[in-house]
Image (cartoon, rainbow, N blue to C red; front, top):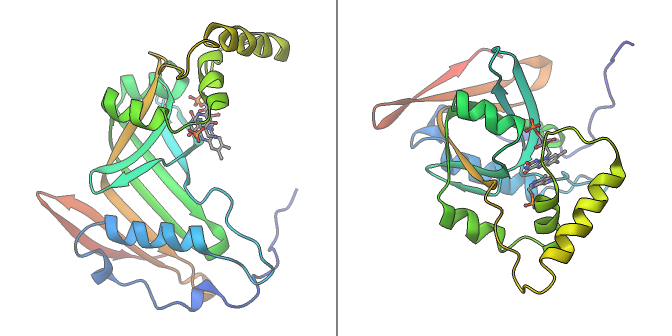
Length: 223
Ligand SMILES: Cc1cc2nc3c(=O)[nH]c(=O)nc-3n(C[C@H](O)[C@H](O)[C@H](O)COP(=O)(O)O)c2cc1C
Ligand SMILES: Cc1ncc(COP(=O)(O)O)c(CN)c1O
């Protein structure tokens, strides 16, 4: 199958925004990331379309053979320390991170012709931080996390539904579902961040910053 050129987005084109500039990253990646995440969250296309899950990021890890794996996770926390996501600590991605605690994440904000990309070391967040987030989740999502041994094989959909029924019964007398011991957050601490902004003729803007001691080295890359 040939994948061709899609329809051009209708005006106003986000690519008419000012050129991405090195100075925007002088203090590191965090403030530009927050601005772009907010833009992605608030953006409404002329036809009314919005970016679904603007906090979705594609997480790249490597397995014990050095074989890369990517999957989407939701960014549930961001500050100048890094980007936080929550998952099962016995999943494939968790095994990858146990062996090799480095990862990349990419936010593909295609609708607004932007992309943000981060690479760095990954560490588990504290149990307190996990608990604080866990208790904001709907009960159904909490029970689903208890029911699913993420990334393990299961022979039938029905077994998953039976597992959900079992944990629903197990916790039915409790007001609060406890945090599973096998569930929690990770924080990716960027040492490299790159912001991409689409431009005419594929002459896109790419600005990268790399951690350099306590500061950041900022430079432009060819598209
Ligand atoms: C939009 C979207 C958001 C997702 N968010 C998460 C998430 O925050 N945490 C998670 O564990 N899985 C999330 N998933 C599922 C993962 O992509 C993946 O299938 C799962 O974590 C198992 O990955 P692994 O086997 O590589 O560990 C999401 C999937 C999609 C499509
Ligand atoms: C399995 C799984 N775990 C965690 C999450 C994170 O999001 P939430 O806490 O809002 O469920 C998601 C989001 N799709 C998910 O699919």
